[in-house]
Image 1 (tube, rainbow, N blue to C red):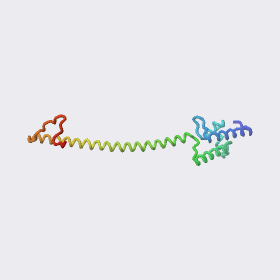
Image 2 (cartoon, one colour):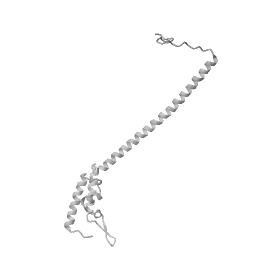
Image 3 (cartoon, rainbow, N blue to C red):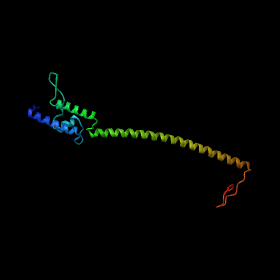
Image 4 (cartoon, rainbow, N blue to C red):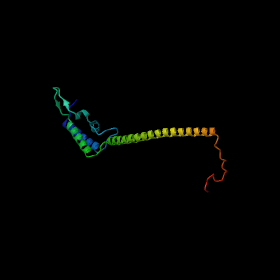
Length: 165
């Protein structure tokens, strides 16, 4: 790989700084995030230039734009600590997480109410069954005794027996 001239390096640094300002102001390209990968793509430089390099003897040296990567991370962190959300996808993720939590809570409440209603239904059906069986038993008992008289059918439009009106 060819070495950069000082003019090329200076132009690249200006491009990185301009891209950094755009990204930190929230002007993200479609599908991009507020990270070093997007910064490198927006500036037109290699992403590896933001990271330290290893010499042949095993020692490390800073990458050509590592100081800009550190500046980017520092500015991004400062914005986040100030409460600004640079990346709208992060804001959307936080909103979706809140929605999921709210929906889980609503679902738990609904499940609890459904369980209560199911228990109430079972109790009501068992009580109705017991009442029906008691009515049938009493009817059979009354029919077997033979001392129960039927009342005449009510005339239409007339007040029922025992009415005060």
